[in-house]
Image 1 (cartoon, rainbow, N blue to C red):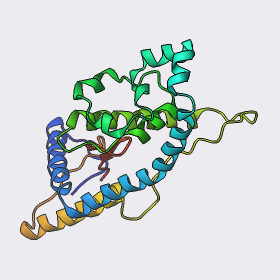
Image 2 (cartoon, rainbow, N blue to C red):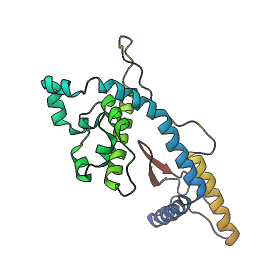
Image 3 (spheres, rainbow, N blue to C red):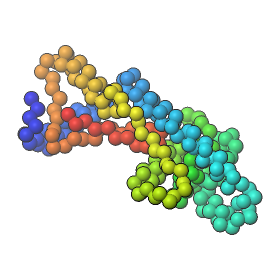
Image 4 (spheres, rainbow, N blue to C red):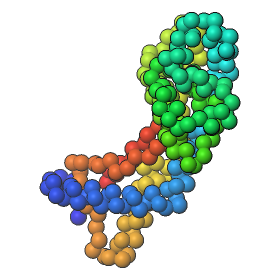
Amino acid sequence: VFDENAKYSDKEKEDANIKYEKTFNELTKTKEYKMEIKQLIDEKHKHNDPLNKEALARMLLIYTPDNIRNDPALRNKVMKNQELTLIGLDPKAILAKHQNDFSQYLLRLTELDELRAIRASLPTFRTDQKRQQEWVETLEARIESLLNKSTLKPNNSLSKSAPIKSWKPKPATNTGTDMFSELLAKRKKLDENGNPEATVEKSNEVKPTIGRIKLDDSLVSLSLSG
């Protein structure tokens, strides 16, 4: 029986972590879990895709060949941030790029609207283009990071910029950790049916993070808290 006031040894904590990790790995293979993750990704796409397209329309007015050629500052920015050459580029041309080309796109000094425009310009990469897919995940994580920083800044009533819309998952009774807890309960019930003495060790002192899942443009960590 789990005692909230009890202190557990390092060995007991380690065993609990191992059991949680094993259970988590089993649950990630279930149909319910995969459906929940897909739903979160689809919701994020639904929110971000229109914003990315709006940013692309704005950036196409700036990053034209004539502007880049005639504006030294803009030309210098593109030279230092090669990923800006992807804005408005033919998706077939992007798809044909070598995977090593994407290692040059560092995304360090690129602004939010530019990042969104790049995302809207990208094609759907083939399943064998792992390096490109990983770069897209980095791009989306960078967009999310800038969005989070923007929401922390104080509001300026004199600003003429449109409010930044940050995606947040809709509250539901069967998503995220709620879904995981429900699946864990099902897993525990199966264990108990097979072995009446089976128990799951838990620690009140340490609530281990047992898995990380890459979503559309963020990294989500799931934890078990008992």
